[in-house]
Image 1 (cartoon, rainbow, N blue to C red):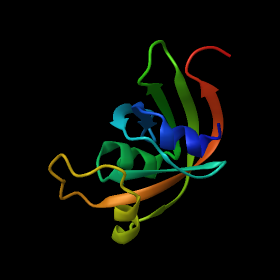
Image 2: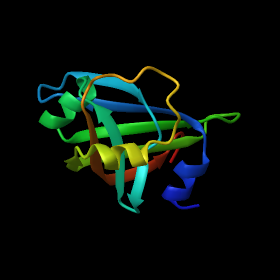
Image 3: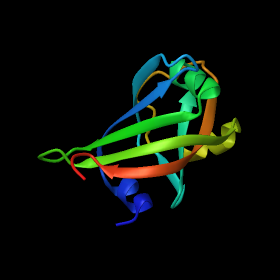
Length: 123
């Protein structure tokens, strides 16, 4: 299964780890990435700490734990390559129906090069 199909069809929990330019680390729950091609992933990001970190340090890591018995999933090692703030584009990429109150925070579609992919456990 390619990465696009994997993230479109696999339910689970994702965690994005970022750090600022001083190395101060943050982790946050994040939805599944949008895979735009075999080497590019995009996340919709609000202007919060993870986004602030990525503007000063382009490196990040994303851990995805599948909703299934055992410890199955992926680890993606990422480098920011560009971003887009087009609200229509961002709205078109949202996967879920609004269950929660939307924030007034400006949103960005942040694209990352996928530098490395590892299974959740092992290698």
